[in-house]
Amino acid sequence: MEQGIANRRSPLEAPPPGIYRDISPEEYHSFDALNATTIGHFVRSGMHGAYYLNQTQDDDPPTPSMLYGTAMHTAYLEPEKYRQTAYTPTVEVKVGDDVIHKPILADQCQWKTHKPIADEHPDKLILHAEWAERIEAMRKQLDAHPRANMLFNEVEGTNELTLVWHLKVKGQKIPCKCRVDRFLPSFVPTADHDTPVSGIADLKTSSSIDPHKFERSIWDYGYHRQAAWYLLGAIAHNLIPEQLHDFSYQIVAVEKTAPYPVTVFPLTAGTIQQGINECRVGLLAYAKYRMHGIAPGPCDSYIPATLPAYLIEDERNAI
Image 1 (cartoon, helix red, strand yellow):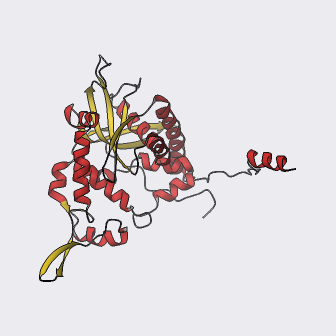
Image 2: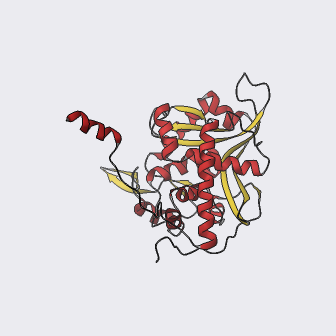
């Protein structure tokens, strides 16, 4: 295959622009539309984005942390579905004169072990060992946190809201989609605010909620880009005004290990603007690939290489 050229996928097909409630994750993922994850790959380059689009789940399987995060999201945002579908597969093991049920899947078991059981029980949310206990402990900590509880329980809102909208690139309509953890049509963010505002709350599990470490996670995992994409979808449907405020997008982060502390991180305007800028770059690269099959690498020209300035300075001081 020629450098910079990739096979185009099928013509763009997606449901009409709209606000969709009660859409299952499976139905949402079937929509052929640009989402925050895909745009993140196209931000790296057209080649990275095209490679991602043409992979299968077995090529890029979910990690144990991703599966755990999905289970936690379902438990907290769709509790009734969690109660009906959560399933920890076990096997009978004889211990002395007793028979106990031992979980089949270890906490950190990989996709190749998880997948056959998930395929055998397609209507179940498969849990690994100890996940149910940990998820319940995390849920209690979220409910006990005043700000998190306000965002997810006390004020009116809609969980798992699917948005579909179009962005136009060089005359071509690009179907776009996102699935918002919780949309809040009207809430008072702090006691200092006299006027209610609208916004989005996003639930994240994290290895650390230390502010400095979590700021790094925002960059590493593209949470700023995801926030921008969700807000663009909400703005397209007039759910949120174009003039964003300090509480337009708030990440509710809970640590994945005991004692499961919780912190709420409102994203600053500068952080969201950086995400919007990156989304524009990714959108153009995506449109070029989908419309013309062009997927260039990060750079097709020469890049003169030099040593870092601090190393050169060190060499001078050594003479």
